[in-house]
Image 1 (cartoon, rainbow, N blue to C red):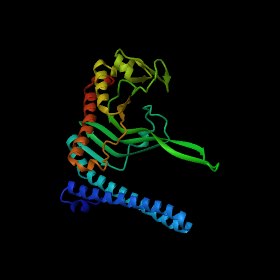
Image 2 (tube, rainbow, N blue to C red):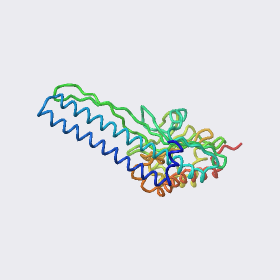
Image 3 (cartoon, one colour):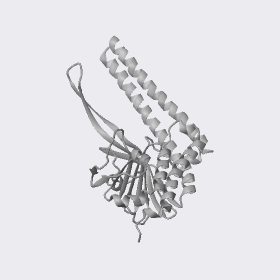
Image 4 (cartoon, rainbow, N blue to C red):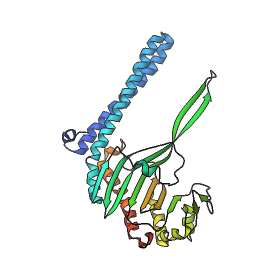
Length: 314
């Protein structure tokens, strides 16, 4: 969205409200296209197939144009918000930052850092943020991993029908914090899946271990190539903090300590910085929600920064 378009609006709220009305028009065009298709179907029984084809193609074209228009307006709203609300929020949290609504974390991170995400065939994402918070480099974005499945069936004409569809296996925020100091352990934490028992099992060179905190053991899978070093990170205080952070996460929590970086991923089923049509009705709430999501992240970073035991002694 061009800057001069935003300047035509008296306020962001006024402009977003105006654009939301255009979305209603787009949905009306989609509905009209579907009605034309249905009308054409009934015309086919009373007239020639040529008449049906005219109605059918006209209806499909109308629906396609309506969908394209709705997506265009939604993107326009998102860009307006990203150029107004996001800078306001990011300035209040970070010393330096850059925001790219159409980019995501690079493949070098999401495809090479093992967080034990279920098997996937494709990865997409958006809302990439790179920032500096009190000397710590941060990268984050919305990430979705999908797995392609194929379903084959036979219809009434004995024809084989093959459907290809995607299943989402992870949808949420992935945050990377570079503390610029070597961490004391290579450690993976993630929430257990229903019925999962990993004690004593080796997976990709990492052993599943347990702590003295039974509640923590029931909640998380803990893997490390060196069980002894894991407890430099998993102090009683840190385990209690991770449990508390997990309750606030709103989804399945994954954490990975490796090198000088801590990776935090939350399978929340949503993009924290993606606006729905309903949310644009109240931009003050949008501001508050964006700030709350960033505060959750910065609170974790502050806790890790102060936990001196997680770093290797020089």
